[in-house]
Image: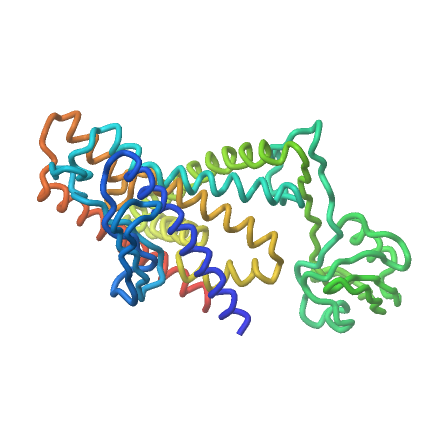
Length: 386
């Protein structure tokens, strides 16, 4: 049930982020004289629709709710680049088309900035060694030591300790780091000790008999622990939000490039006649598969885990996904915004007409490439469940 509700929350957030993206296209199109015919939440078949005489997207726009809750779309008048009627997208200038195509990217990027800024007011998770902040205002706050792993048949397991328990004291001594916990358990091995911890905001005491040896390297207590740091800001929160978004955008581009390179390299190695080279190639492909997540991975694993961790973590994940949507839509994949822009620009530089037939052919190839990529990632997601 927890996974179900987490998936529902995740689906709602994903749809909302895509709707914000599409809203950017629609608003910029209207402001530049391009007609908006339909704005849909989800994908057809249509469940409900109503034509609104006057709206933020213009006059007589059809707003629809559709049965496939996987995002949203905006349908512009004369969407093909070769359309030439009044108010057609195709009749707009190159600059106007560029603004319309990249408006969705900008909306997702701004959304990430806003979310990171809000989180910074309450404590932005510090996940990078050199994560951006303003030292004159922002401070680094260390959170309580937290249980990340509880080994089976360990003293911690027998005493009732669980993941996400916050460890406060060991025999009355404050626990300020994992190293302190490791040293104290070593010094008191084989003895009965009291551990003060907090679960769901309630402090409790567990009496634990520590192991006498650590031959299996699972520790005398049998837990893995970690300590989170957060960046807390006041007046500089918007600056921290902007700086964090820039930093994470670069890392996302870098990570995407490395993943694509390793996937291609691994795929080529996997068809080598040499057995060792094939094994290395398969390993590289598996590593790439484990580092990415599609809809099933996000909804079935990542979002439920974030939901358990709290609202702030959920906002952080939403900001990361919004930023990822922005980055992906700048890539030259024909079925996406960046791909449409690159296609349009290529034909313009070649001084060749981008006819409806040519555009549909390019977009269809890109669409099938994108579907194939989604299927590969989905297969990887399903495999992770087993």
